[in-house]
Image 1 (cartoon, rainbow, N blue to C red):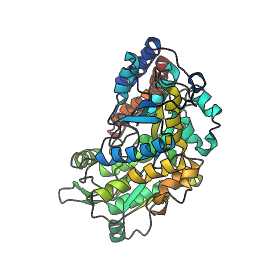
Image 2 (image 1 turned 90 degrees about the vertical axis):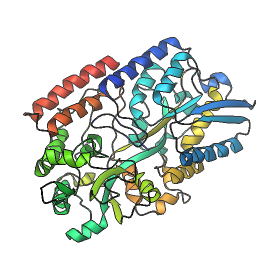
Image 3 (image 1 turned 135 degrees about the vertical axis):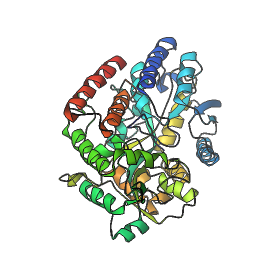
Length: 457
């Protein structure tokens, strides 16, 4: 599953929310790591074709018994291909633990992360090694990876990570509630989404929300700014890496749409309803229990619904496009897991072999994607007949979003994604009615973000 921070976070069950301070602290720690560890080595330096038996360590954040068993099954395939390389996998590892190990000179050979926001800091500080020499030496075809996915795994001219499965976001809808409201198909425009929300919403006698057609309150479940603004084509940063939320009209348009729906419900009513919503990653999720008729979420929700044995007849669709932006229908947001070689890796040659296998081997990608319900990150794996998920109609919209050339992501930055966290704090004020001038507010966020971006450099 995928990444998250406060307000507009990129998050999943395993991705913690981040604060501005945490993001900047992470960036600072990475710079320190670069100063306290030895020089990076490349495959060419270490004899990557050496078949001397070796054991390498691989830290990843997956933690459930099913997930770890799925990873181990793929690692068994790797060992079969490279019998002289034994992988010691360590589950439930966090980015903080990886950073501490790098600073302490005890880094694993390979590490993965749910949080692509850290890629900018890792690449710019050298905390993760640039994989470009290995990629070029082995003639890895990066065109097999969509450009949006390539963008969040590299920074500053360095590709210090590779994508290891991805998350795309779409719209989940309750078919029973749709039929009851007389709605025959999922919305394709944002005005249709707003109209359907009102038709699907029911209230209690005291005026409180009984069933919400949609949750427009940002920061709740998958309703995050980075999952919303692609419907308007918003770009977070300019070509030269400056904050763009005040300069790109898409942000003001998206927030204006969102606030109009918040106002229709009433912010206080939404806050009360939010407080009664079940935990996002439990069987009490409000969509799974029928209290939320539509919601934004990642492809993994399909697996959650199945595993929770939720009694719900549902469908999925791509996110609606903003009115007048029909070309964006079918596109959306993509994020995902990244994997790389920390500075100080003891066996870089074997480490690269593992990274390459996990991120480019079609069988490895389809096996793990099917097992944990994520999107594989190469076109070959997406088109492989071995990908069982491609036969699931509720998974199809997420594959469509992933393949769409207009799909976007949140770009890597040296500040560890603090520009998103800052925006999240602003959004909280906005949706509660504490921002009298939206344009001025967004301009102020640009100034704050640019200061954080400069600090992170």
